[in-house]
Image (cartoon, rainbow, N blue to C red; front, side, top):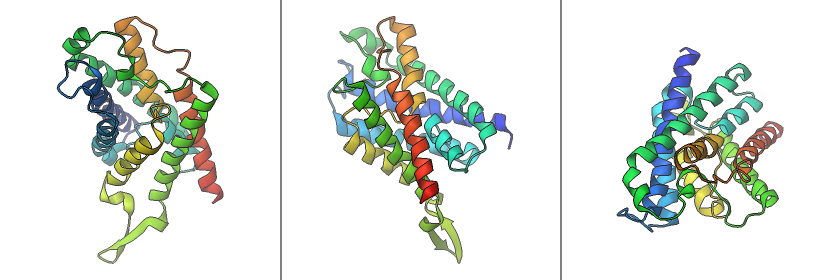
Length: 241
C-alpha cells in the first residue's frame, strides 16, 4: 500500500475523530443544544468512541495513529519508519483542521445562538493555568496512552485463536477506546487531556480563523509539547523494559 493511501486514511480517520470528539464538546456546551450541560462523563465516553470510529476507518490501511504523538512514539520505539513520520503528522494535522471546520459547519446556528466564547469546543484549556504543571499533566497522560498502546501490541498480550497467536489489538479498536475513556475520566480534568497535537492545535486554528478572538495561544504550546514529550518518554521506557 502506498504512503499516499496511508496518509489519506490518516487524514480521514483524524477528521472524523475530531468531528465526533469536538462535536460532543459542542453538544454539551452550546446553549441551545438538546444535550447542553450533559457533563464530563458524556464527553469522555463520546471521545473514546470518536477515537474508536477513527481507528475503524484508518486501522486497516494506515495503522490508525490519528495523533502525531502516537506516530512519534511508535517511531522512537522502532515500530514505525522515520521516513513516514512527517507525512503522517501532516495528514493528521490537516485532518484535525478539517474536522474542526466540520464541527463549525454542523453547529453553525448554535454557535450564533450561544453567548460568550466557544474556544472549549475546539481545543483544550487548563482548569488551573499553571503552564509548567499543565505540561507535566499532558506529558503523564500521553505517557500512559502511548505506553499502553505499545503494551497492547506486545507479545505478552497475545492469545490463541485456532491454534495461532493473535494480538489483543486484533480484536479491534475497543482496547484503545477503553484506554481513552480511562485517561479522560481519571486524568482529564486538569487540562482537558489533549493527548494529541492534531486534536488541539488544528481545531484551535479553526477557532482563530472563524471567530477571530483570542484562541489561547499563550497556552497552545502545552498540548503540543506535552504529548510529544510524553510519547517519546513512553517509547524510551518501553524499550528499556
